[in-house]
Image 1 (tube, rainbow, N blue to C red):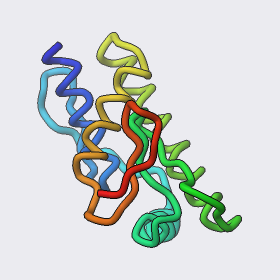
Image 2: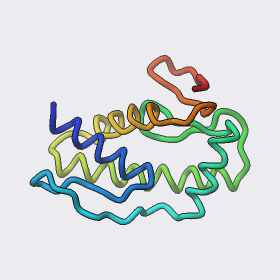
Image 3: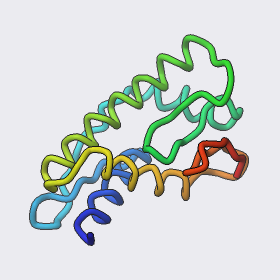
Length: 127
């Protein structure tokens, strides 16, 4: 379980704009963020406006109607996240779903006041 928690926290650190992953010995290894800087900026602005939020499953989702630009940026981030979750799951001998959920829990915890999050209830709440 400790290994899963470490994998989840490492994934969450990466997704928050960090560039760290744990290597097989528990050390950190630089890892480039795959989503574009422009996508990150669009997503952060959309989160601040309450258009999209973090879900417990580790992915972003629209809270309501969103523009095509916001959707494309959100999709870019989600694709990058999925790739990282799959890589971490493979290297840790666990499932992508478990890594994604651990990252989702950390991302929800770190969401800024006013941002929307979706927990186990499936309902959006504003922090």
